[in-house]
Amino acid sequence: MRSSKSRSRNKPNRNRSNSVGNVVNRVFDSSGPEGKVRGTPQQIIEKYNQLARDAQLANDRVAAENFQQHAEHYLRLLGAAQKELDARREQQERENRERQVERDRERAQRQEREGQSPEHEGKPQGEDATASDQPDVVEAVSEDAGLVETPENPVPEKPKRARKPRRKPEPEQKADDAPAPPKVAE
Image (tube, rainbow, N blue to C red; front, top):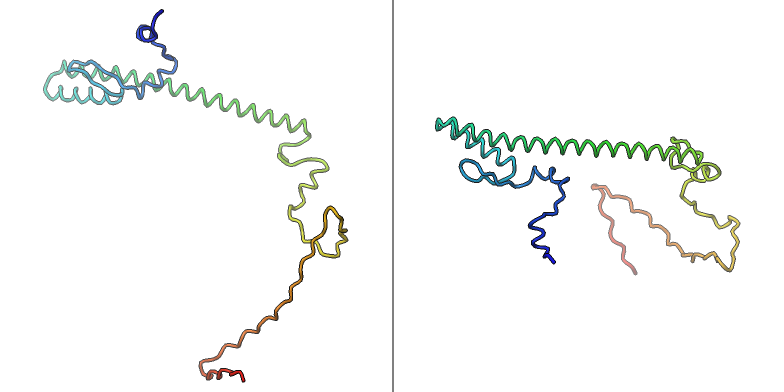
């Protein structure tokens, strides 16, 4: 019996279909002419372009061309991954639009079966239509509305309170008038 460790070394179990979308953010180790360059494709492209500019300034056309070729390789890799991502995104958007059209078609068919027109979407038809037009507010019922008290649902009586008479506001005094002396209780 083989151990799972040796099997994973010999035959990695990776999902290859999703690996292209990962290229954009994946970290690569590039073995270039001046050692390893590590980073995402965009970082590697920038590094090789910088090395190519440095080689050009040093009048080393062969090294500059070599660095440019390395940068171009990663540029193509990045471009292919980006095209595939765009194609995948367009396919997803197309499928979403098709699903939405299908949902709209099913909704219209369901409304036709129920006797509704799309303009009255969400409103009931028939006898219930008049009830839905009524307000949801229940007006206060007066005492003489003809309600009958039953043992199941007794009408509670509200206790009546005696009202205090309102105080009349005192008239405002003018600045010219002298204030009235306070009244003293005898």
